[in-house]
Amino acid sequence: MRAGFVAMLVFGIVLSAASSDSHAQSSGCTFSVSPTTFTFELKGGSAEIRVTGSAPTCTFNARSAYPWITLSVTQERGEGVVTATISGNTSMTHRVGSILIDGKEVSIVQYGPRISGGG
Image (cartoon, rainbow, N blue to C red; front, side, top):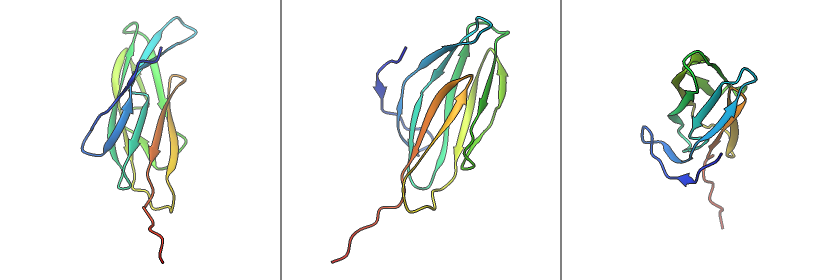
């Protein structure tokens, strides 16, 4: 279930974030992940993703395949906070990545440098 889009500022670097979504494990556990989308400035920064399980015994796993995204927690029971740290963007364009938390995708968009045209 996807709620509306909300504006958010976390640690002074997140420009926007979308609200929550939930996902069910085959074991019957359900997780709520919020927010599900972040947008970062060129310099990067950190943001918190809240994860809530339907029972204290439910275990969630968090991972990202992108080297510029690091996570504070990779496995937790019940509920918790996963802090995502996004490194500065040194490429010439914006970049898009993701974090998977128990099968639920959290999208990360980071702006590249603004290049003005000459002439």
